Image (cartoon, rainbow, N blue to C red; front, side, top):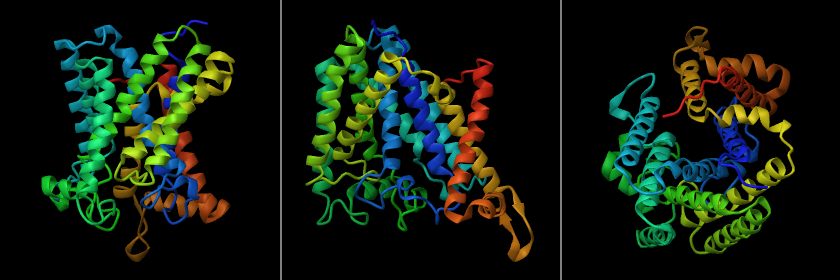
Amino acid sequence: MKIPDRLVSLDVFRGLTILLMIIVNTPGSWAYVYPPFRHSEWHGCTPTDLVFPFFLFIVGVAMWFSFKKYEHHRSLQAMKKILKRTILIFLIGLFLNAFPKFNFESLRVMGVLQRIALAYGLGAIVVLLLPRWGRWTIAFLVLIAYWVILATGSSSPFSLEHNIAGGIDIALFGSNHVYKGFGIPFDPEGLLSTFTAMTNVILGYLIGEIIYMSKDYKSLLKRIIPIGVAGVVLGLIWNIVFPINKPLWTSSYVLYTCGYATLLLSLFIWLIDIKGFKQWTKPLLVFGTNPLIIFVLSIVWVKVIIYLVHFGQGDNRTNGYAWMYQNIFVPFAGNMNGSLAFALFHGVLFWVIGYILYRKKIFIKI
């Protein structure tokens, strides 16, 4: 069976990552979250830690197919589109960081969309400027260089307090403009680690190339499954000296997550494109065909009900987010299951919005 230019399995994979992003970002209470839906405190990798790198990997795979129109070579038209898209996504992320208070004295500069923008932009330029061997070489050199840079930074180079990546962000942006969720100024979407995040995109692009060049699905799976296994194994081996760590986006983390992403994509290709089990994919296609707008709307909604919607007065005053969790979900499900139900509710809510767009054939792209 010939491989088509658009894989349903890739859209489903993208849709799954967006759904999981919404679910893990919107628990009813961060005090009540089941372990698989939590990020690792520092070193290590939970299922939740796989979601963001999976999305960047998918960006890379899709990029191979979208760059066919440029014949995978640089051109003024291609570079202008890449630059425009990078700037727009970055600015949307910056807007979301500022909304709704717009307090520029403490505005966080980096963030999830900013990382997506820069990883996409840098990765796109690399793959269009360089031949195949050059793309592999850049990915390899970035991973090795990042290891060397972090390892020589201090006596405790991979710790939260003393890693050089965090110091660079503070030096460039100032401590008021970086993430403080770890208790000290440190940005998990910082500038230096964006270069290793870029390699998720490049490696995804190289898998996209293998997909397109394969003559049929059987030969494709024979090629990419061993690559996925190798990525996971190499990541675990490297973890011995360079820990798998999402906040630092370590090189071992890149190989580990790209390996698992390749294996999961292989599974979806086998289930959907080879075996034809497609009925279950329809809800995920809704997310996968409008990922950016659904993700942005989910963030805007949460910020609106936290900062702009309030119930009660004085000491009893609470924001809309906490009120919904405490008054709707906790009474019937308890704290832990109520928190999960709250997150799942938001997954359904934004599926409905996505479904309306899907039915009306409205696909918002930048």
